[in-house]
Length: 203
Image (cartoon, rainbow, N blue to C red; front, side, top):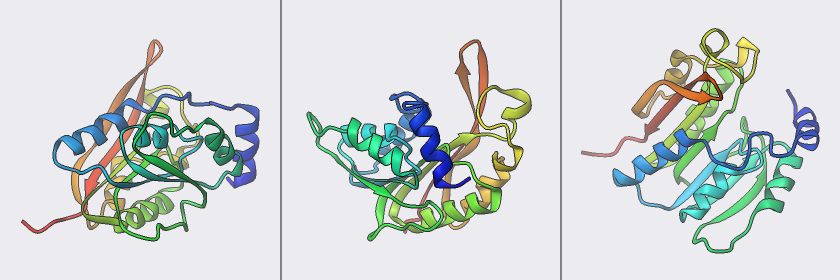
């Protein structure tokens, strides 16, 4: 799918995923901070209209929020405000497959980016290479198992990752958590897949 299709989707349905960040991403970032990750620089890759980037900035992070949809970035900028927060967001139009930050970062968050397994693994490996020593990477997406056992999400099995796909993307990193995550979705349950990893540090 190209940017024009996503531009049309955001024009037709602003706030498609609401303004609240995914609870699992919040929990994983918070746990990383509790375990010693200092609040610093971060990337929200494939940020959509920015719900995770705004949450990070509200908690003091300096965020580069990147998406290839110009409309999503325009909508994200329109919703953004610096009032009452210590962090900031730089909204960037860029392709997750090719964009890179200028300098290493402390945290990369990737929420619900769905590509073919090879491309997703490549994005994850690239993102892992952006991390400072001890930096963290958090990916959350709809799982392949969601088609049979869950509800919602993409219905194309070629873009739904499994555990092995994320394990391939974590090559070279220390894996903190790699698992399915069951998420209440109304009266049903969605099946997500989570990778939380960090760059190795000398011990």
